[in-house]
Every structure is written in C-alpha cells, then in structure tokens.
Length: 429
Ligand code: HEM
Ligand code: HEM
Image 1 (tube, rainbow, N blue to C red):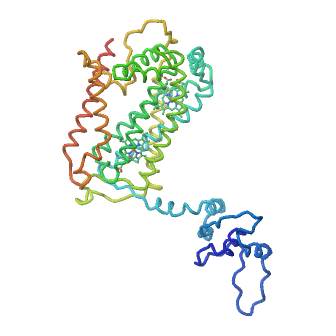
Image 2 (image 1 turned 30 degrees about the vertical axis):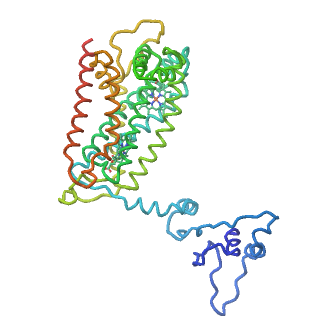
Image 3 (image 1 turned 180 degrees about the horizontal axis):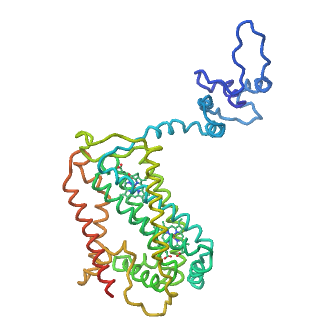
C-alpha cells in the first residue's frame, strides 16, 4: 500500500476513486470522533511528497500501477480470495471463460476428440517422465534398461505399455479430430490458425512417434529407423539431413542419443508451445458450428464449456483411460531382441502404422526416380492440406464447399486404403 500512496503523492494514479483498501479507515461521519490515523500512512506521507528523483539520488521512473484488487469484496472462500487478490488482473479473462458455450447439434459428438487427444498427450508426459527414471539412452544400456523397466521395476511394465499404447491412441485421436474438424469446416474464418496450429501439432506428434520408436533399441526399432531415415536421401541435400538425424552415416548409438534428445526435450518444448496457442485460440474464438446449422435451426441449444462440457469431456477421458489400461494389460507390446547394428534385417520391417500410407506410396513408385516423385507429391499434398483454410474461400463466406468435402474424402480414402494395403501385406508374412 505504501507504494500506491507514494504514487498517489507523485500524481501517477488516475483521478478515479479507488475502492477502499482492507482495514482502511472509512470517511468519518460529521461530528464523529476523529479515528486514529493509520501509523504507516502517516510515516509514508513525507516520502510520498518527495519527488522521485530525490530518493537516494537515484532516479526512479514513476510507475503506473493498476487499481488494487477491485474484487476483494466478492464473497469467496479465504483461499480463493488470497489468489484473487494476487491474480485479479485475470478476472476479466475468467469472466469471459465462464460465458463460453458449446453448440449442441447432431454432430456435437465429434467435439470430444480434441479433448481426448489432449488427454492421451497428458498421459504421455506423465508416463514418459516415469520411464525416464530408469531408461538409459546409450547403445550399451538402452535395451537392458528397457527390459529392466518391463521385468523388474514395480508396475514398470504397465507404465511402458501405457506409454506405447497411449502414443498410438493419441495419434489416432489426432487424426479423427483433424478429419472431424475438416468435414465440419471448423477451419473457416476466423479459425484458420486453429487449423494451422493443429496441423503443426499433428506433425510434432508423428515426430514423437518416430523418435520414440527407436528408444527401446530392439531389432525392429533399429531396422525400422534405418529404413525411415534413409528416405530423405533421395532429395537434393537430403544426405545432410540424414547425417544430422543419424549422427553419422549409419544408424548407431549416436542416432539413439539424437532421437532421445528430440523425444524428451525438443519435441515436448515445441509441442507445449504450439498446444498453448491452439488451446488459447479454442478459448478465445470458441467452438464453431457447421455451416448453415444456425440459420436452419439445427442447433438444439448451447451448453456452458465450464463446467458442463468439461465434465462431459472428463467422462470421455475416463472411458479412454479404461480402454488404455485394457489394451495395455491384454495386448502387451513385445520386448523383442536387442538391436545388433551388424546383424541382418529380419523380414517384415515396417514403420509405425501412422506412416504406412506414405510407406506404401514409396513402395508403389518403383520406377527410376520414383521415390523422389513420391516425396515431392507428398510434400505438396501436406502443404495444400495445411493451407486449406486459406484455399477454401467459400467456407470462409459461410457457403457450403462440396469440392473441399470431396478433397477430404479423397485424402481419407488414400490414407485408409494404403494403410490397409500395408497391413494386409505384412500380416500375411
Ligand atoms: C514429455 C513427454 C515424453 C517423455 C518424457 C517420453 C519419454 C519416453 C521414454 C523415456 C521412452 C523410452 C522407454 C520405452 O521405450 O518404453 C519413450 C518411448 C516411446 N515414446 Fe515417449 N515420451 C514422451 C512423450 C511421447 C509422446 C507424446 C509420444 C507419441 C505421440 C511418445 C511415443 C513414444 C513411443 C512410441 C515410444 C516407444 C514405446 C515402446 O515401444 O516401448 N512419447 N518415451
Ligand atoms: C496434439 C494434437 C491436438 C490437440 C491436443 C488438440 C486439442 C484441441 C481441443 C481440446 C479442441 C477443442 C475441442 C474440440 O473442438 O475438439 C480443439 C479444437 C480444434 N482443433 Fe485441435 N488439437 C490437436 C490437433 C489438431 C489437428 C491435427 C487439427 C487439424 C489439422 C486441429 C484443428 C482444430 C480445430 C479447427 C479446432 C476448432 C474446432 C471448432 O471450433 O469447432 N487440431 N483442438
């Protein structure tokens, strides 16, 4: 309070009346006995009268401070009041969030998948941190520490299985979420950046899957990474990229260290940054309804995001958690055998399922230079997909855009058919 008094003395506070400070004397009624003057205020008065430059010979620029907590009289618990006094500047934000609503209509079900992706990501961070307590990212110790987690650490097997299964579920949910927002055209103006940031999140999630795959340092992981990191070589300058990724010409323990640092430092940092932007946009811009729903009366009402929609989200998370534990306990991922860089590749080496569509495209383009053509096509496709909100002008004008719905269906068909082809080919081996 002394500082505010001081500013008042220096004439820095806007002249509007301020709410009374806790314990501050109320204006006395005429004729009433004079209340004892607050000692602190009396002592602060001479200092306040001094010009800022005179204090200790050091010039202190006048500091403009907002009003002290204007919400302190609100009826809340002492703990809430303690926080409110410190974070009162956030009060308008909280008031805004309290008003946020989610539209209810026949496609509302799809709104749960963003939250589910978020839930599985949180599980990944939690289980990843637990795995880090025992995992050792070196060529000589990675596999043995991984086996130790699976066999010796109490519940280590469960944590590893949950991490491996939740990785798949997170990527799966992100795909469902992406296509549902695509078909509902939720990317249309002003939500363009939600789509773009979401697309970056998907790329980062795939990066997590790719880098995590090598960490167990078993044979399958080793050779799959060898095949995966070979791909950029066909591009001009791609050899340098491969060198950087592998930390040398071949996949080696050096590669393991690089993948590990990407997996536990760079990617989490980037993902958290972009995720914060994505979720802030969700809060600021709110949830969209499909084109024409509002006009044709297909919205059956709205429900509050906090707490109603969040509570429903939490039910989805509970179901997701049940599924996760069931899969982890009943369908455990194998441990495999330790990677041997000098050994020969076993048959049936393939990447994680979420790379199968691209993998199949590379396999289909067997002609001279085909791999480069496949990479170029895929890159163009990814750029167009990421830029969809800026290309679909009709949707941004709230008009139906069937051409883009067809584009979405084609992309979905490409992914599903190619993924199935890899599944069918490799499960027959
Ligand atoms: C901060 C977050 C994370 C940390 C600290 C972390 C840490 C780890 C560690 C230490 C391992 C090696 C142990 C093992 O192989 O079981 C691992 C493996 C793995 N991680 Fe993560 N991780 C994180 C997030 C993620 C995310 C978001 C994904 C996927 C989208 C992911 C996917 C994987 C995969 C697929 C494996 C290999 C699983 C296996 O076969 O056992 N991780 N992670
Ligand atoms: C780590 C991955 C992701 C997380 C955790 C995440 C999280 C969320 C959440 C919680 C919401 C609000 C609820 C909802 O509408 O589902 C949301 C909305 C949205 N997300 Fe994502 N998302 C991710 C990836 C993506 C991807 C890959 C895209 C598209 C390329 C995307 C595009 C959008 C859009 C357009 C909305 C707005 C939906 C609307 O207004 O109706 N997100 N996201």
